[in-house]
Length: 331
Image (cartoon, rainbow, N blue to C red; front, side, top):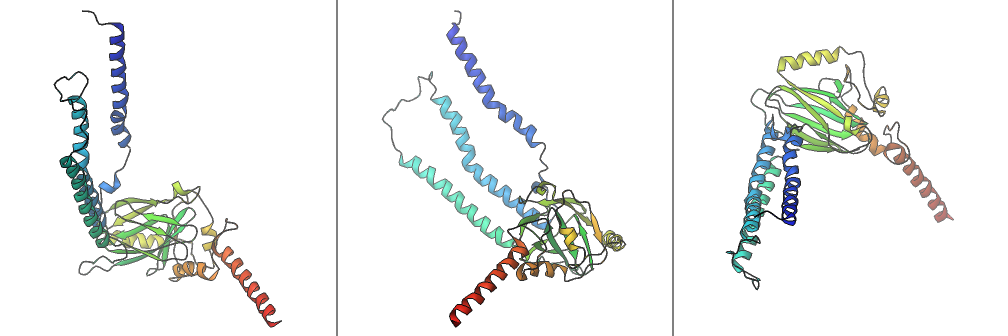
């Protein structure tokens, strides 16, 4: 018997609905193909631990998600309009067994997630130094977030670089992180962890790379117009290659200090090129941190609102207010 027009129209609408609902699932793999998946391809001890935590948490959550998805399709098929064999219970309202399962299983999963997250978070405390192998000396690198670039200072070597950092493979590195401007965030995704850079504060991040390579790093916190270009490259090399890199930096003609060169460097720039400084005082990092505490912070290109200028104005206002109050008391 020929299918009626209303029936054909209904079937077409159903097919179109299924197609448009399935379309995002078909497009999703194409969109995800552009992701670098850096967190899932770690090259260091910390990054590997973070990957393990992500995967463990994912599969624990799938214990709830997968059955729910399966039962959604199963129930839709079982209780479809044309299945007259399905049991019809219009007065059903409650089941203690279902309630127990629905609440108990997620609670157990949440308890396990809380436990492993707590343990991993404490074991990967960024402030805790990573133990070095025998004969390997840990390295210290000072990191300063500027608008919109990264300044890396090697206090033990007396050199510095902009938007490029290098260190030997299998060497624990202690990054001392601060900001010479607004709050920012420092991260090398394949090595793991990210840490905020804040003006007047000194944060510690300990990382180690287990493989040689060039790993992209970036700012992960919106901090203005040039934030998206605030990227750098981390070169993980052999000891000999690192020493050659140090010698290359020492051949650079530019020098840098808080009194000379820093103000010009701190001026806002976008897509700043890699730059080397052959001579840098070891106390430069401390000078930058302390400048926000004593009101001498360099804030070129910024007006009215934060940093050393605001601190100095506030200090002057408070001092004048105190003098006025003392005069009133004396009268």
